[in-house]
Image 1: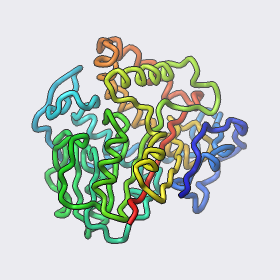
Image 2 (image 1 turned 45 degrees about the vertical axis):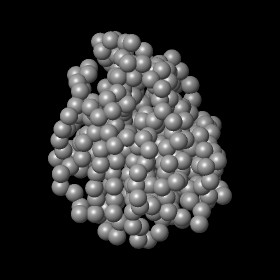
Image 3 (image 1 turned 60 degrees about the vertical axis):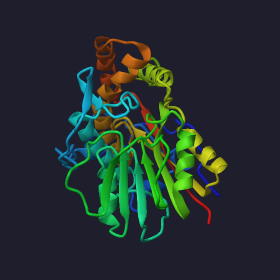
Image 4 (image 1 turned 90 degrees about the vertical axis):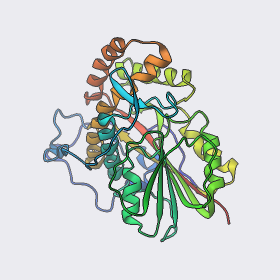
Length: 356
């Protein structure tokens, strides 16, 4: 059993970037293998006022276009939310959020070098489950890449497309309820479910029980709150937002601070060959490293689009008005776009195997 060790990034190597154009991405660079030990001393601040290293890069108009329908919904703060198990999930399900989730899939493809997962699953998986599938984009991509698999995507909202691969199906259900699957799964996947569950450990245990011997569970999630290589996050509206979201999530019974416990819970439950990979996602293009700068460019779009999606945590959890939330978010957006704020989100990719 092995894993990387989590911990804050060091700021000891923050320096002025060298004169002239930045170097191209390092050949053979595999960010999926990034650990904190590797990143320590390697993530440097680009203190120039421009992004010449990515001058030819821009956000695509659409990452993956899907046609989907919301069959039933509730309206709150001008956004739509799932009706089934109403209130269980604090993020909206409207077209704005669907577009963001599809864009987020692209950000993960950058972080994982176009891999859907690093877990060493068997070459021809038969049954695969995507927990909290959202728009279903990961499940659809997996079904195309692995025609041997029957892929199920599970979510509270019916926002998945109508035209999908023949080996992919979607179901509307609550993954925290009792699982009734008759088949055993070769692979179970969960991405960015930090905000979804009251009891993450119980979900991991259900996944363990539903796996076939030798099957893998993989969780890809954010470690909240944000981190910083220096003190530039201190006193910002962005840090205030972090603290308020943490408080609001706790009050609605779904804390956002559990990701660093996944590995320990999986060990307790009985998984073996557990690996934990740590991926730093800069909030904008502040790093000198060209790859991290590109990742930060796209993650910045994700964060800016996703801020409004957190409104319910502040209105439901802390009793704020919509106007109060929007007033705060004006300054939070400015901080996300400020390259002098050297913050990042630490993403965890944790996978383990069921013995047998």
